[in-house]
Length: 120
Image (cartoon, rainbow, N blue to C red):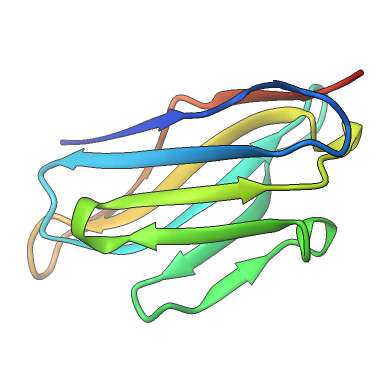
């Protein structure tokens, strides 16, 4: 079993910054990819940013130039530095990870979500 625990959400004014963190623990042989998704009220969950084991990074167009994803492979952690936040960034942010439990078995996991509210 694997657990993903997010931290760092909260209330911030427009133009402000927040840093989200996610730590994976449990039965981990190797972490393939980690990333962040978000879901605003009444909307579907959408990709924010992902990074794979090779270091390739993908951002949603709406956050390019404002958000930065980074990984700490030694600690099985992923971070999301969010800057120039806008009210439309308000959502619950979820950590996602694809994890190998052995050389052949892998699964996808989600964190419990952390709320981000951008409001004056």
